[in-house]
Image (tube, rainbow, N blue to C red; front, side, top):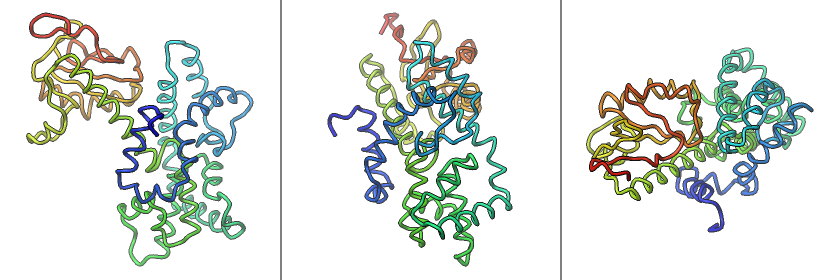
Length: 330
């Protein structure tokens, strides 16, 4: 374990100490490792197969058959630029896949679609309960496996329970399928969760761990520069409800702009996510704490860095030209 890269160390640390702990005892670790490191293989395969036809979901760690090839074409053009890291490309792919799922979400939640999926699931497990029926169904209708598992689980509980299942009960069963009263369905849900690269409790845990890793990296860089700061936990202890990751107790200047706070984002800054962050977070920070800096560790669309004069700077890494109060470069 000590030989693993830091990201994997954080992933396993957070999974082990989170509420997924009980679930982990039932996961085969080779499958989990494939879910973590297989994305690098998946990306190279993604481009290799884009012209010959996409593989099945099991082969590509969750990529659905029929995934929009136009999306691949745009990402492939980025991939040819040597300045873009593989992590950046994977972040872009994940964002585009989630946009695709959101665009098609409604059609999978009509009463007709839900009943059709449930009957197909029942017919499939009657023929062979050990086959990945739900996974293949999600693959066929081009929907995320974990979201398909949620649909079928909710439908199952509605039929077998007296009261409609609450969201907390559904989430608990998805985190720990052993709670599902039907063993066959529990296995089907488990297969969907460990083979979904963009949704589900394991993916959420991994994303949280990666985000935390970059916050720790930013903290270390601030300490290395001898910059005094308050972190999110300290700010919340003081009664702030919506805070950036770090508030600088003594403002600094970056590229001629005063900086009071820094926010870490372990993702690529595309137009959709950045505008959502501006609305939900960044302008609130600006109103309360003044101008600040956002670090998109996996890069961002350059045209989005258009609010500098209003007080929000974007960077793809920790700035090297920090000027402190005493006019020296930190």
